[in-house]
Length: 515
Image (cartoon, rainbow, N blue to C red; front, top):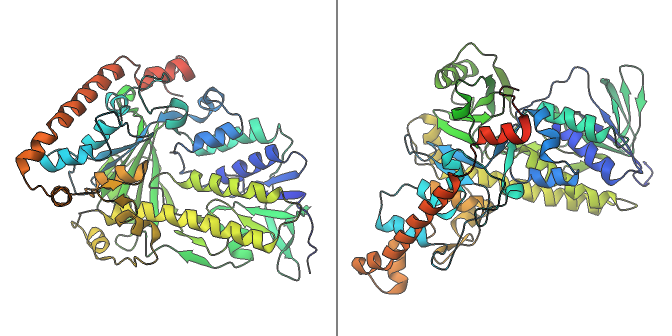
């Protein structure tokens, strides 16, 4: 039986974004512990995580990293929003999910915009973000600012990044992990020896080097070398919840950089999935996420090339494993990143789950002895967070009104067990109290963009015992005027701020225009 002892040496297996993120934070937090990271010589990184959420700022601050420190080296740009196009129906005009919080003043409350929508059915759902988020004016004008000129907008909190994930991982290794005293081993694992109880005893390398540790953190991507292949921990597929399992990815050059360098990730729904467009400083990252149940890989590539209008690029095929292992920490192995689980690229959740799992690992490692109960609580807590986010992503599909292909028709036919699908159930009930959202952030933006509203005109009439339509039109006339005045006011403010291209050139890249 393996001896129960304190965790003094940690071996992180895998040198991609997950591996280096874990190794760096642990070395900074536990300088007294020996942290070793193994980077295989022949194992490629997935490298699709080029779009982030505002949470990335928490991670950067944890490592004391400033924008100017890493952005230039990582081909980075700023991200202020996610735009969804054709998810509700083809030609729907799209809608934004801007980072930050909505702005309520003395006149405007949570439901103000919805009443205008009911009274003016042709009002675009994009107007919700334009009306409720003042800093949408920056996004619409292609501009950005680090000044406090909009209420509810905080530049360091409410902007994220587009960057090259491989360059980002390499930068953190060189500038954070190694200077802190971390050790990188560039060797391939050829054999894994195990104890009698099944835990990992040692890793045998192709150089005949033998590595032993008290805890092994599996960051080996979809391969899941330790948790999946070695310990055989069962994997729970989310196939019933999320439709996609494959992707093609490529890099595109700018044709007109000043116009194409947007402050948001664009997600466009197409025949069998959706296409992302991520504008970095020197290029655009583009990919097609789809289901191979409805189209084979070659035909998907043809569709992808047709949509982006280019076939002379280098295309990378990615097979995605959607779901999560039933346990993430088993014996002396803990998996973080793709080796633990993956939802899909929509909503840029990859780094979010890495950092969330990691931050929950830290207090456990501060204990002298890690009990089985503590491991199980870690597993339960991360499973719950992961499941909730997966169901949030699933809402982007289930609220769709598309039926133009077999792919979208089958999504309309999917049955959801409301007893167990917690996030979906809350979407229909708990996130709404009589006529208003109980949450802020992404959910109201996505739900509204997909024409799922917290109340109806009839419900308003019912609870107020007043079905006089003229009364309600008159009641909210001043609200309409006020919102329109607000939008014009914030637009004028935005127009005084620099374009994203100029801002990046001035603050990060100097006179560089391509790299």
